[in-house]
Image 1 (cartoon, one colour):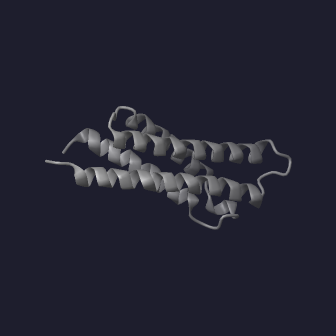
Image 2 (cartoon, helix red, strand yellow):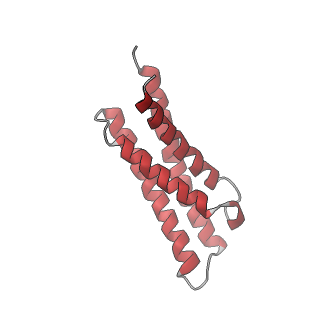
Length: 127
């Protein structure tokens, strides 16, 4: 067992599950989408992205690209959340919740692609 691969897989799967946990639920109900879970998803996705920088293979490049897409969408969701909660005069409306959840949904898709690539790479690994 390679400890580096375990940590790498741990952060990829944790990023996907945190993001999915935030995404699931009624799209306009802010009670079902915890801001701390979004924050944790952003942080874990950024850690997973940093871990992918060392892989110089073609599969590693695709994994890095999917992680960058997830990071971009989660950061955009966090910015919309912060602006709606603290800056915009109408406050945190169901329309803003829908925007935040939609952005995190795009990140969920990118995370799922990353997990699929990780599984394919693991299956193709020769002993």
